[in-house]
Length: 310
Image (cartoon, rainbow, N blue to C red; front, side, top):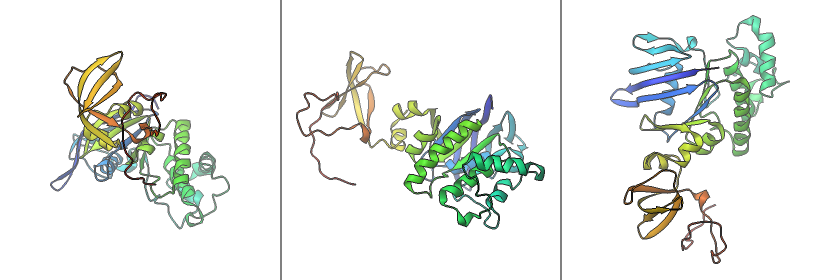
């Protein structure tokens, strides 16, 4: 799909006096996978349900494929939006077979060709006659994905689709879903609170905090350059430390964190004395028990191990 798959402009959704979504702006390009990342209760699922048409926004506009579906007296119900949705609990019909679940809602004339093609696409060939309770969790998720893709939607919405799977199955299915969406070219929005999931699946990440979309950009840019301390914390950066710019030289910025001095790559210019935050991820820390004279790391700090958690 070319162009803009979906555009949100100032979308707000209230429940009584509580604003679950506040003035959200977001654009998703054709073929793009956007990860809505944020803590539980921040409004991600409400935003997804508003896009799908399960909730009416109180303010703002929703456009899908250039067509206004909500806002300014426009309202298109969920079945008219061309949106597929994969729920956290799969929502499969227990009394229907795999093939019947995938073909549900398709015109009868299309099922004979469309259903086998989709089962092959999600690697479920030969399982069309089984019932959901006869499948593993990962297989059930593939059925839900095939059903959502069956009507060739303009947009796919995924609401924490891997939450109920164990670790190995989650990792495997993440890879498969990304490859599948790249194959079909279907734009998608994924709701997750797991940064690893956002990194593995998203082309773009939109950080949601308190019902607001606080930062949007390519995954690598947002994770390496969070806009503020709250966003850094929501991205799972373990240490977000108030600091001050002490100087710069040779492409490096010298940062003072209390009495400690750190050197960081100079991605943009800062004035001396500027207040900043030093963000340190656990995976960027190397522990050494010997002299650091031959180590490749730039910053060396004396420390003491006080606990070990596995």
